[in-house]
Each structure stands twice: as structure tokens, then as C-alpha cells.
Length: 119
Image (tube, rainbow, N blue to C red; front, side):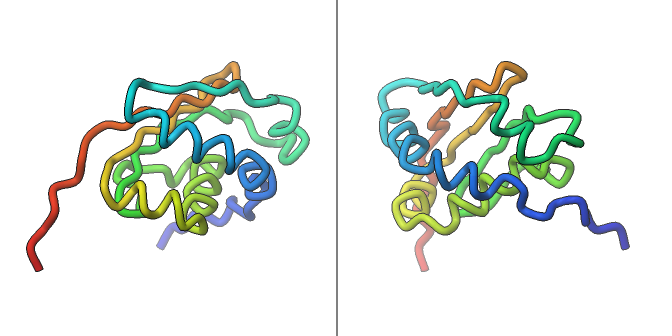
């Protein structure tokens, strides 16, 4: 069994700091894709050994729907989103794409509404 033991939540304090801005981006992404420039030096200070900080995370219903096992940065973002009542509510209704590029620009795109399942 190969589990990713490299993620020790280096980035959760940083994502928690940016959480209010990320929630605003999620709400605003209903109109059009949003972006926010993060401070690269903060990520590098959290884990200087990390080689690649960029990722794409597709999230719906509080879960990643794409493979983020190799990205501690994305896993920690999802962890912070799961702890937010507002983010959880938004992800219950819609699918979101979070992309962090090499210039540390976070893009948030609302992809689609999740169809309500009859219980």
C-alpha cells in the first residue's frame, strides 16, 4: 500500500489566512472566472523542499474529483475548504476548479451545477 506520507499540512496556515479571499472568489466566480495573486515567498517559506507548487483541483460536495495525491498544496487547500461552512455550502451546489500556476496566481472557476439527486 502506497500512501502519500509527504503531506504534513505545511500549507494549512497559509490557506487559512487566504480563506476569506478564496470564499469571495468562489462566490464571485458565478459571474466569471476569478483570480488572486498569492505571495510565492510564503509558500516557499512553509516548505522550502517543495519542487512544484502549481496544481489543479476540481472540487464538488467537499471532495476532490480529480487526483491531487501528489500535491500537498492542493490537499491542504481542500482541507481548509472542508472546514468552511460557506465553502461546503457552495461545493454542495456547484463544482469548482482551483488552479495555482507557477506565478502563484490562484484561479477559481465555477464549472457547473451539481444535479440534485432524489433521495
